[in-house]
Length: 193
Picture 1 (cartoon, rainbow, N blue to C red):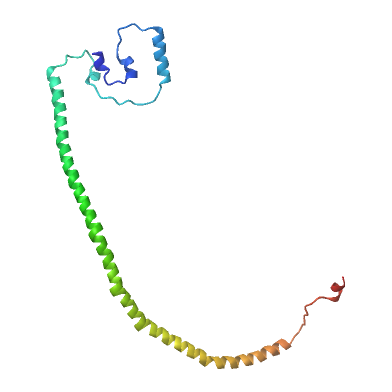
Picture 2: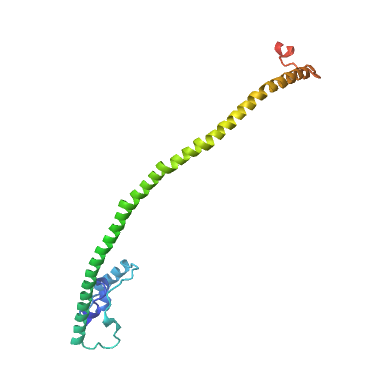
């Protein structure tokens, strides 16, 4: 009975749960106390449950039917684990097939088709359309505007030179009229020192 109760308790804590029949010496008690004080690790031990822990009075005898029920429970658990393990193998096979099929479709069919369609669309539709639009519409208009601008420049050049001649003479006249004349240079008194 004592061993049955202490089944789920770790070895180092069994001395609290198992009632020993041998007398304890003072040295043994001191060693146990030293071990307990040295090993104060705050860990919650998860042990396999034991139905004997819930007994509050003396334990009833273990029945043959209980042993049979435990064995049946273990056999049923193992049986269903094997059944679902076999199903898991089948589903893993089907899942791997589906994933590899999707990878094959995306990598071997969709990707080359997408890249190929975009390249062919660019080579045979977009580039010719852009060259037609530029060569037939944009370039002639821009050349026309360039020719008009150069013609206007050539037309306005003599007028601007004539206006420039008059303005140059007026600028020389304004430069000759001085209210104050400032000469920049070194003064004689500074040069002597």
